Image (cartoon, rainbow, N blue to C red; front, side, top):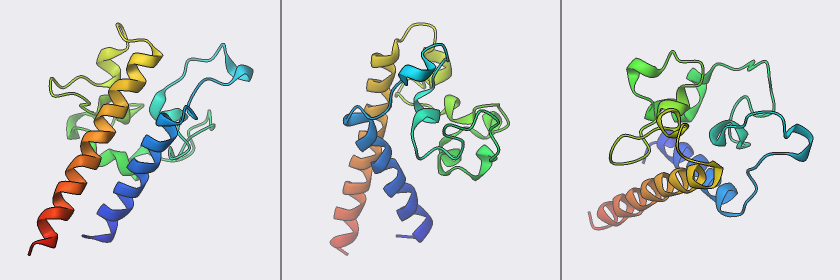
Length: 125
């Protein structure tokens, strides 16, 4: 497996661990501030940086963003997370924080499952 792909998978596993352990959430200091699951994770290049000093194009998640959406202000909000193509942007109107986290967790688990299947296939070769 290429080093970039391995790094990507490690970051995705870390994101899943943070979500599963309840480490991602709104701080009591910023209850007034809207939050974003992807942006609140410590793996985000701009986590806790209101100025967004780093380009999202350098984020590993950009690989999952449809090319037509990569110039958006928050490109990771356009990653298709479900088989129907739902993204953080499209679920914002109907999903609460808990439901949104569940959708992201399921997406991350699916990627982890694909990694395990790939590892099993390559070990047989």
